[in-house]
Amino acid sequence: MRGLIVTPSVPDSARLAEDLPEPDPAEGSVLVEGLAVGVCGTDRDIVAGHYGSAPPGARDLVLGHESLGRVIADDAGVLAPGELIAGIVRRPDPVPCPNCAVGEWDMCRNGRYVECGIKQRHGFARQRWRVEPDFAVRIDPGLGLLGVLLEPASVLAKAWDHIERIGTRARWEPAIALVTGAGPVGLLAALLSVQRGLDTHVFDRVADGVKPDLVRHLGATYHTGQLRDAGLSPDVVLECTGADSLIVEVLDIVAPGGTICLTGVSAGGRRLAVDVGQTNRDIVLENNVIFGSVNANRRHWAAAADALARADRAWLASMVTRRTPLTRFGEALHKGDNDVKVVLDLTT
Ligand SMILES: [Zn+2]
Ligand SMILES: [Zn+2]
Image (cartoon, rainbow, N blue to C red):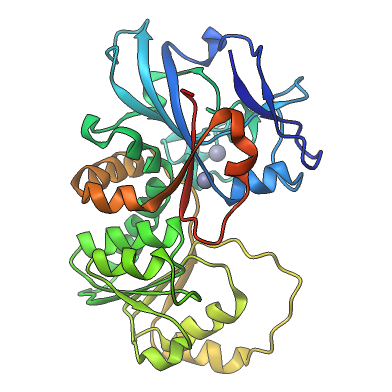
């Protein structure tokens, strides 16, 4: 069978494998037909040789962590043939650490977790894969191909879960949310914000293309230019760019008692002059919280599946700006100016 493989640490080694072995029954009782995988910056980083590792003893890694598949059979009898599912990306470390021991592998303390298509476990960019029922998440059948958005949505469901847990430290009635970045992560953050009834604002560098319309169709407000000029005082900020100058700006405008959730991974290596004393003073005197968030556990995947099922299908569909056959994976790995989410079709 076909799949997309890479040799981690070797730049530009992504290639189509025509004779991949059938998935090992040790990967789980559920045999799945791979329908699609979403492509994101993590995949591009792995292909560039910056990130990722193969399973122990293997040279190559099957790519793909944003999965969509259809159940062929489940030897354990939990899932029925024909069900649409996604496979959870991260698997708990074997020790396990206190968090992995209770299913909170997104908060793993020792870093010995594995991740499908990223770290030491094969991914989903292949025509058939296997998964344990405990790591399979059902997708509303009406979503069809749009179910491929479940993995990125799970990351934002976790971010919102933690924002709300932080909020309950005191009385908390958030009204305004700011999302920085209108890529797939930012747009899904904004979707979950609108679903919570918040007055949602999205800031991005670009002034045209599909992003402003996607934000407006969601019922949110789009901003570009200088963030300060927007005159916002958000109770919640979801920073989805990792851009250093923007992080400094959101620190400045967050409302008293407000929370900033950082989800973007910055490149590093650039220095910015920041008045740490003044920043500290502002954070203390306004009870602000700044925290980082990554990955998702099963509870978050379930919340994300609910959120996608409730979302407007036409809106979700307009997020998928390109659908590329597996055989033309090179085009999918190249990010175009007007791309939001690019999906690799495993069935063609
Ligand atoms: Zn991703
Ligand atoms: Zn752990």
